[in-house]
Length: 208
Picture 1 (cartoon, helix red, strand yellow):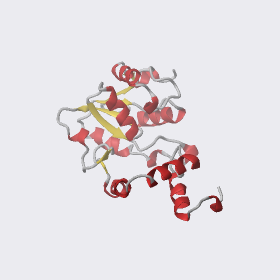
Picture 2: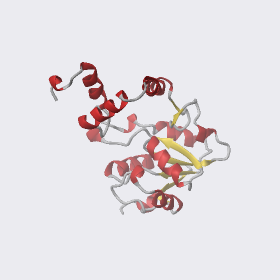
Picture 3: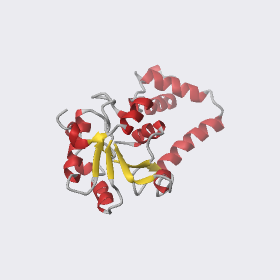
Picture 4: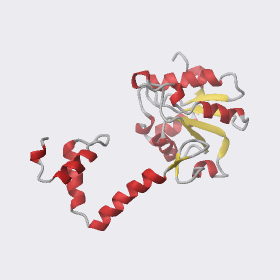
């Protein structure tokens, strides 16, 4: 859209910024900006400040790398969680998906992505070494692979499996209630919960 189609440079700048967000086209961006313009000034200020505060003050848990307000996230700091079982996930959205099932009481390890050569993401870009260090401490007895059942997710699972297979830890993966090609965040809570409960040894999933 040309600049002369906007009545204001300020409006265009705001639309351009909103349009950078995932899944937001220029029409949606314009609708959002116009909505904000109709709101009281203090509400827009609160909205803007919340984003600035988020960006400047958000932390990543030193233990699991989940997003947190504190150095150690609420899940890792919760004494009622089972510290011996760790669920390996790609990102914060997957932590939220698993938590919503209310079927898992262990801890997490957020990789921060999955191996994807097409996107220039290799093992060194992920939190794999920190996972190994957690296991070496000897407090973890089971690792559950809960990555998306895509080629990239399976590749990441297998890479980590090869790194961990000689360590004294049980390696499990979700039961195939999660369809091949699915991303965890789009799997319904009941299916994901059952896949967690009925998890299987990782090695038994190889070749299937």
